[in-house]
Length: 342
View 1: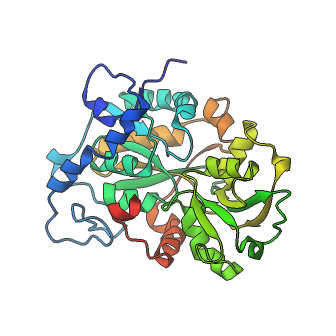
View 2: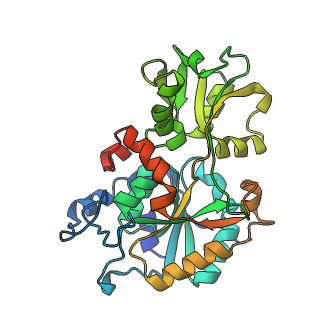
């Protein structure tokens, strides 16, 4: 297995040779695109729905159309790929290497892994043209679609086409909390404002279960699902809504003892991390990217070991597969703006 070049500032994609940047430089990712955003010109009047004014949606599929002017199609020699910042990205540079190798082979391009640490940095990196392919977590996906021109096309799934994860509410086994109404007066860790299972879904669903976040219990943002879970184990938080796929991977790595916690609530399945390409990529390149995803064999790879039960990438589309998520976000009065993404 060759060494992964981890790009922590996607402006590095414009320089050669590629070098690993300090993680502290990630702060620049959310700042550098701002000047570019301010100078971006709106498209002429066109159908766009919730899309930002620099995009159009003539075909009504809720994602940005490829530019009509072929001179605006991007066809980079080096592709920048990023995985969702739900957990410590350093863990995943080696885990993703088998797929990176496969993506390089199929596209005949160099591919660099971008170690992103925030949803806003990841979205703005794609909007600015510095990020070409990305896995966006469930809640931030609509922001990526509407603010960055991301086009969701795949999810991790099984051979029978099944995919998804659940929202689970965990508490310490000795907390005395046995049902949702027991959360009243407690300290509950949510992950971040844009997270689906870590914040948006709880705010939309919990009132019908007898508890209203911020009213019946104190919301404390932990920053990530793994921090929420570890906080429950350490009894820093009384409970936490988290994504099942994250805590399952944590348990598999031995990061907590499953006997220390219990689940008091679980939802039906939500779609998991979406895999996207930038809307302005050359159609021939997009065809190769999709071929790479849908031909990748997880079996026997580090990626397959990390995502247990996943056999392949499953084709999806944003309009249909993210309908439930958009409904949850609408119930929370979410607006797809940079301010709501922060």
